[in-house]
Amino acid sequence: MEITLLQQCVFEFLGTMILVLMGDGVCAACTLNKSKAQGAGWVVITFAWGFAVMCGVFIAGPYSGAHLNPAVSVGLALAGTFPWASVAPYIAAQLLGGFLGAVLVWVFYKYHFDASSDNPDGMLCCFCTMPAIDKRGNNLFSEILATFVLVFIILAIGTSGNAAHMGDAPIGMGSLGAFPVTCLIIALGMSLGGTTGYAMNPARDLPPRLAHALLPIKGKRDSGWAYSWVPVAGPLVGGIIAAGLYLLVY
Image (cartoon, rainbow, N blue to C red; front, side):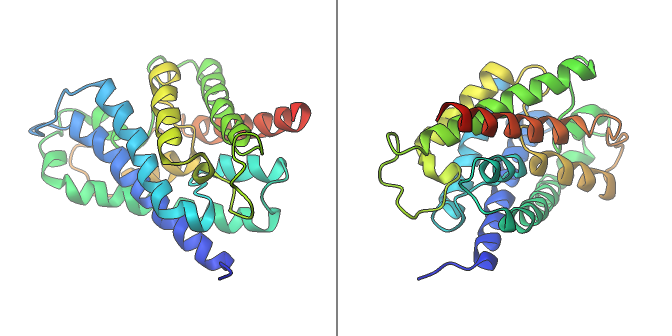
C-alpha cells in the first residue's frame, strides 16, 4: 500500500509528540519539586532521551522514516535521499508535535510545576535547552557538531553496506533500527550534551519554548528567547554540513 505524504506527516507529528513528551518528561521528573525522581541526574536523562527517540522511531519509522527533526529532514534532502517537496510538510508536522508534547508534559506535571515556583530556571529547562555557560559562539559550535554527528551517522548507516535491507523503505532515524538509534542518542547526550543540553533538533526546542511562554506556569521566568536561535540554527547548520560530507565521501 502506498503511503501518502499526509500519512507520513501524521506519523511525524505523532512520533515527535511522543519524543518530546517522554524526553521533556524525564527532565521534569528529575527536576521538579516533590517528584519521586527528583535529583536522579544526567545519566537517567540521557538514557531516557535515547529511549524517547526510540519510541518515536517505533511509531513513525515504518511510515515516514522517523525523521522527527527538521535538521534530519533538511540533511537527508541535501544528501539526495529525501524529496525536497516533503521537507516543509515534515517540518510543520514535527513542530506541531513538539508543541503538543510539551503541553502534555505541563499537564502531566502541573502540580509539580506549581510546587517548583522557586526554581524558574529548572522549570524552563523542562521544556527547552539553555547553555551551562552562556558563550554563544561555543554554544552554537556545540549544537553544530553534535547534530553533524547525528545526521552523518544516520546517513552512513543508511548506506547499502550497513542497511542492505532498506530497499524502498523511507530513510531516517527509522533506518537505523530502534536499538542503534537509542545508543546513538544516549552516546551523544553523554559525550556532547554537557555544554548546551544537546538540543540537536529545532522541533524539540523551539515549540516547547513557545509552550513555556504561553502556558500559565506559576513563577516562571522569561523563555530564553535571546538564546533560542542557537538550538535552531546550530542543528540546521550541522545537518547541512553532514549532508555535504556524506556526498563527498560516499
